Length: 113
Length: 116
Image 1 (cartoon, helix red, strand yellow):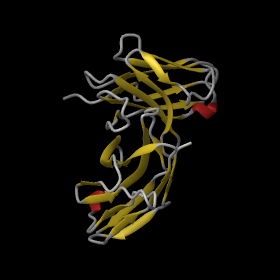
Image 2 (tube, rainbow over the protein chains, first blue to last red; image 1 turned 60 degrees about the vertical axis):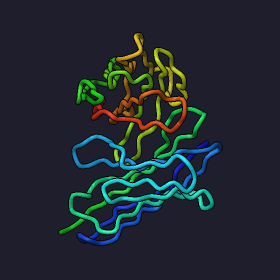
Image 3 (cartoon, helix red, strand yellow; image 1 turned 45 degrees about the horizontal axis):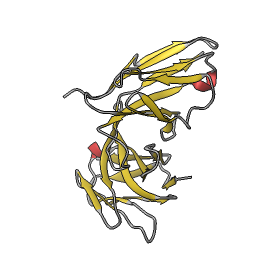
């Protein structure tokens, strides 16, 4: 079945550092890819998504590019802020199949001032 | 507008009891999903509704778990004879249409279930 392998944390960075969180996927069909974020004490919310190969999703300074050749969807941000401290989840849905999201285990990011 | 709401926010019960968890999706969303999130893990799929019908219930762990959506809006997740291993945060999500695999799923705040 579909699966997502996500870089395990925790990750601790200083403010303004560069962030990469790796995510690779396996899918039997043609997947859509998502990054969700869970801020402390809040619910899951969509950060960005891409639905076809070579698409780049972006939001709040975060970016991820759907790479079919490497089956990857790595999350990047050029300069993190303390407010980016959260748990980040990579997820996939197979288009045309069941609508279920398959999540990675999550990566906890802490940004220190 | 209003997001997905879930009640109760917290539920503590004793082993063997029956519980119901409620989800109010975003108005007009035809697709509704239930997930379960254990501590330190990503959410795991339980069941997906398209309208009133369960389109995929492959994630329900056993026959103690059941969910309904009788009028195509509010959904109730029902757990019989609860066990300590059922303790988790139960998340509900909705999306506008479903069926394409490209829709964004909007999540509620979750119900934290603790089985003593």
